[in-house]
Length: 405
Ligand code: TRP
Ligand code: SF4
Image 1 (cartoon, helix red, strand yellow):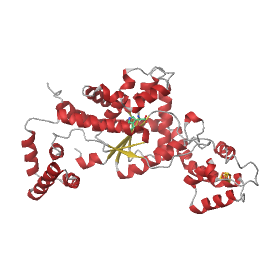
Image 2 (cartoon, protein in one colour):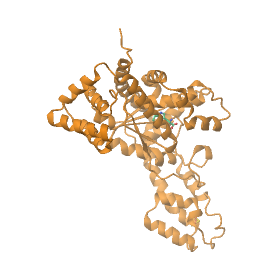
Image 3 (cartoon, protein in one colour):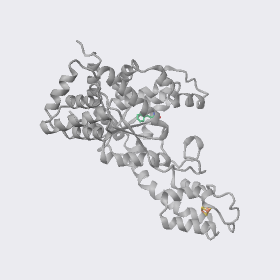
Image 4 (cartoon, rainbow, N blue to C red):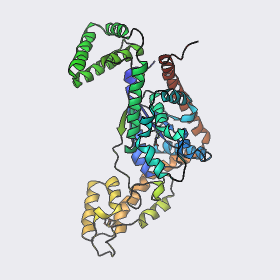
């Protein structure tokens, strides 16, 4: 049995199986995951069913992409001893929850998710007028809610999906959280906290419900998290009672926006496979060096003697990520006075990128040589994830009166 405090400290994120990853993934996502895994109980998964929502006619690409991507996760430092790494389709509970949630999801909620129309426009060559494609944000909601995750690290483009998840959770709790005798049960649960805590809880609850005092709501939640004598069910009831609703069966997750600076590609646009401007994590060092040496600079700096402007140069964006204050001053001074050449300016970047990639590539080689190890990590992770998912699904089935025999 896990506590509510642990639920809120649970982090879940997924990635579509896109194959080998590049520095954009590393700086934008993986470094963040690696930090989170020390602080929270983390679940990171390969969203292979999500790949089918757009690439249903091309399923053979999935398998290789999964192994390649997970090797890069591990090589970058995702630690299976700390974080659970698993594959979505190995945890079929996601699908059952998706089905059950679909019963209460208004069509209009899905139709107004911004990615729905955007992606249909963008991927014109594919026929995306399918049920699976419309429903994929709901599948994502199921991915999150099945672990009762509190935090979901995502990029800007995915925030709308976490918002949808919050609305679905709220609706679910509203419809199914009203067990018979809820008020009596909530009051009995209050008594189990002890006199002092119960009194405080009651005071905060009144202040929240009658005056809308946010601080009181926060304080009451914190108080509930501290309680050691409550069962999970009782605590959920008191979370629900606090806000005037029923029992909180599926807690609302929050998006955790990645603060990382946007990793520029070799041409200064965002690094992305579709722009052909990436540095893959497993790129050959000689190729990395060549790519950086030949990358464009301030176009107005034609000759070595022409002064340049870092603000107009993609190389500068790399300095913003990789260089310290002193090096950056050296760049600004040297560039604007034509005191340094562009190759000279690129050298600290080349050194920094190669140094960053070196240990990643070494670990990638080790995992590549042990495919069974990678498969075992995912098998174990999937089993561990299933255990948590089953617990949630048991409660959901009970709430929806599906546990009759
Ligand atoms: N939809 C996400 C993407 O395209 C991947 C994803 C699927 C995900 N399920 C998730 C991300 C759950 C966070 C949480 O990038
Ligand atoms: Fe860009 Fe550096 Fe050349 Fe200036 S000196 S144009 S910042 S590469």
